[in-house]
Length: 212
Image (cartoon, rainbow, N blue to C red):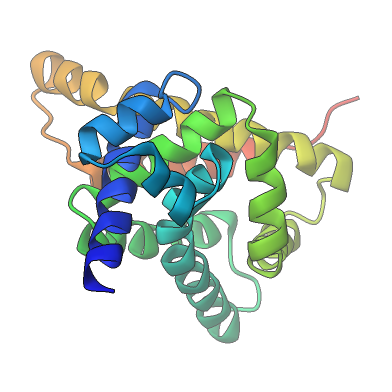
């Protein structure tokens, strides 16, 4: 049993690193098995398919992040019935940073993986996330909507997707952006600083009044 568990973990670790670096489409099972030093039969035994492996890689993060984010939002709303968008988005910072305790560079890797899924149009991931974490997503969307009641639902749909796109681009470019900021402005930012910098921008973008 221990050997089976170790093999499964090695496959997940190898797949996670390759998916984050190269993307889902560009990472073959053969490449994963080579890095994990296992045979293809092991991947089929533990996961059944590449799609299931992709979901399992993300689930290691989502199983921790989603409940933690929901808890933070509920805690905020219990003390502040009129929480601002900035407050709502800020509740995600601690759950995101806590992923570094789950895995080395966990925050960055998780956001890179989400970005890969977003950019590569992995439709099965949308189904997986909405099916397994739908209640958490609904809570977040409702909290955002309650904080910006002047935004119609259809418009909020677009703005939340623009928000996700902004986060994806920012995290995909985080290394380059921090290097430029250091060279040009003398700023020294870590991953938390980058996340906190983008929150006011997201809040303002989501809340800006709709124009005819």
